[in-house]
Image (cartoon, rainbow, N blue to C red; front, side, top):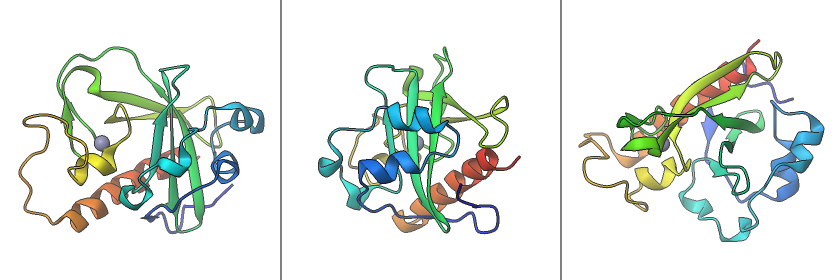
Length: 171
Ligand SMILES: [Zn+2]
């Protein structure tokens, strides 16, 4: 299991293979990591515009996954979408606002104590990187006017994600 306690920084992601993705999960059993639905279109993912890889399980919409590159290696986290929520809510990673369940409360079992979980509001499609870059439109009013540069917004998102990963991986 990668140790991201000391340097919980999150860097940009590179094109990943299915094997790398399956090996990265910190909060699943080995069997779960082997069976979970990895995107079939990995080669077509817009890697250059991604700060992390995130996806929903098409066969099981309450399941979602994210994989990030940290200072100590890849960290994959299995998430579950909590039901409900019709208010307009802001993603805690990229600060994009979506109506209805466009932002979902995602919960993750903790890596070491799987009876415990942590939760965070996230873009339901985990496409934070694309919303930040304006490559995916979240609709009017979704992005607050920002004085920060894109690079700074990306760094802020990485810091937010690192904070969430730290919660998942600390006991
Ligand atoms: Zn987001």
